Length: 186
Image (cartoon, rainbow, N blue to C red; front, side):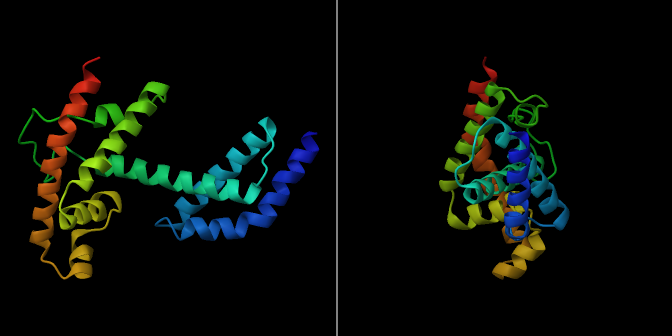
């Protein structure tokens, strides 16, 4: 049986490796990240094949790759997204510090629940913003696009973009403060 599973993994790598790497490369910023994600996909395939059969290997691989890309973007945005000081200053010490909750080392069902809840609430709060503020925030914080590049893309003044992001962050602080208080209440 183990040899059959190894053959399945080898055949999957031969059949989907090149296309899967191309798929991932189109969705991440650099080749190193793409190769890391692909390695994670193969590792997960080897772990799952030993536990249960996969009916549609191709679909499963692309789904796992998509999930890994999303996880990488979330992790990166957790590092970039700073509700405490959107402009580099800590002018209000009364603001929630989500870093302590989101960037904990351990992964437990509770931390996963809190992370998912945070992202859900963040995206709901983003949907409440005017389109321009929301777009600047997403480009700058989640997509890691510099203000200069956004200004070039939109034709807007950099200071206007910074101002829009600031309004977005102020709204998000206000909206997510209640969530923070509920989470830390326990």
